[in-house]
Image (tube, rainbow, N blue to C red):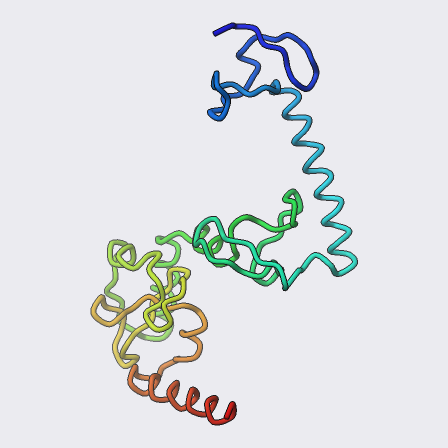
Length: 202
């Protein structure tokens, strides 16, 4: 393989080390030099930023009729600000990972455990969970709705404290809805809600 190559953008002959690795090319090197590629990326980001900033200002950034797939959870979600973190450097103005996945990624088990322990102390509840216990549930779907969680646990029996046999992974919505209800009463109430919806839709 030659140690010299001509950049497809600027047309200059340069050492092969000035070209990034690109497995899609036959010789494993990009056709554009690193400097030209960097300048191209900079222009691309600036163009997207300006365009998306204008869309935000005139209220057209959100596009509820369009969907995109999260690179982490692989779910298709509408391209709206409530579901995706903004990233004006991207073509559509949003991150490639949804807000739920970003929040999960940013959460650290030891920080969550410390918050749970602090909350339990304030409420006078016993706390017998270790970081190893929390890691067993970390990233698991919600016990009640099977959706992604952000590392929090719910006590099945609210009359008891935090122990491994009494906790399940739980999303924020289900945790708010359940509050201190026992599991059977929570399910019974959900059944009433579903039956009421069916009656209204007849």
